[in-house]
Image 1 (spheres, rainbow, N blue to C red):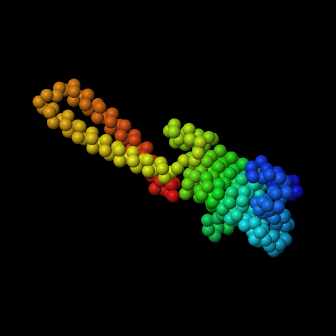
Image 2: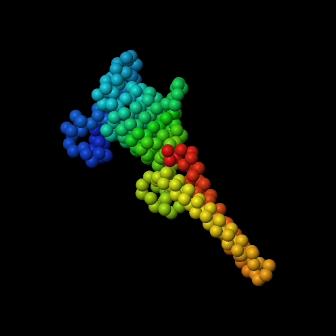
Image 3: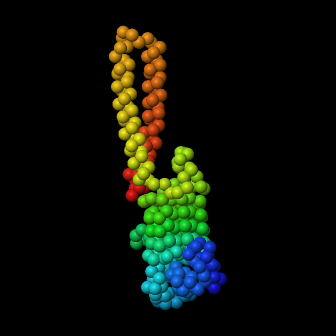
Amino acid sequence: MWNTLVTDFQVIFERDPAARNWLEVFLCYPGWHALVFHRIAHSFQQIKIPFLPRLISNLARLFTGVEIHPSAQIGRGVFIDHGMGVVIGETAIIGDYVTIYQGVTLGGTGKETGKRHPTLGREIVVGAGAKILGNISIGDRVNIGAGSIVLRDVPDDCTVVGIPARIVRHRGQSIKDTEQQTNREHLPDPEAEAIKALFERIKSLEDEIDRIRHSTAVYEPLSTSMRLSEVSHANSHINLQDLERHNSIYSSNYLIQEFLDGAGI
């Protein structure tokens, strides 16, 4: 346990630029204090000492604002930044070198028995206010956006955002086949994308109205002056416009449906 606590202490300097000296971290970092309390409570829980582990856990909550059940399994090098409002359930498992920000909940979804809390892999970053609920598995090197609610398993090397959370990047590449999304360096804005898709839909409808007006104007003098070759050329031009419009509507439908399913809430 001592080596684990030393590792927990050292990683604070690696991940927090505000950590200036060891005395400040030792006395003023509630996330580290909560882990110290938990390591002690967990060791008592493992040897089945009654009452005392929960008492230590409750005292830790009182002094740090972090609630960790004594039975939760937490790996080495875990960093709880700020810490206030963090809740970690009884059957939660956290791998090594995970970073957890304030307001995070690793909780259950009801009154299930047995394993009912999430399992986190290694080197995960859980953003402020994120909720990971139920007996689900989060793979290694996953980034969970602030405020997200994760209800399903997440594979390795992914970024997830939204309510409910969905995967937006995998191994550094966007899951959408668009260059502008692939080149982004920040998390996407689902609301902005949905609004943009709605504007594109309106534009496509306006183009459709213009196309109908144009086709009407083309066919009106057909009986008197237009040759057959001109009709064929006009039809091919209209068919190409139909294909482009269909592709545009399909793309915007995807974004709008994602938004309606809760991705942008």
